[in-house]
Length: 121
Image (cartoon, rainbow, N blue to C red):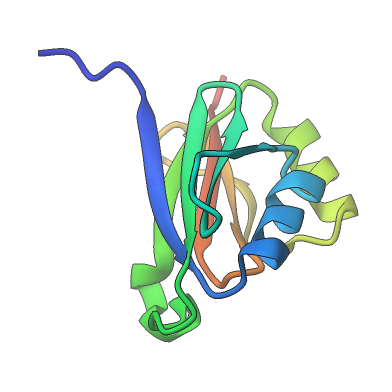
């Protein structure tokens, strides 16, 4: 058995607001998937299915459980500069960690937290 790729599934309170954030701040393409309450956010090998769930527990109320992904990238400094310039809320400062990753974390407009990392050299 081989895992071929990863797709995250998220409940978001406002799909339009979420789509704008992933497109404008994180550089994802937004794709319709045949249901008006769902969209696929796509960037390179990453896929995120987002469904509008206004009644879901707000991710901000989940504390440390609001993290949903760790995306490994090839230029962490450029990504950090781009998302910072686009106004993303940084929740973990860019730093080299003892586990061999240079990483930072953001909070999405939906309240989920997302980590980005690059192997340290």
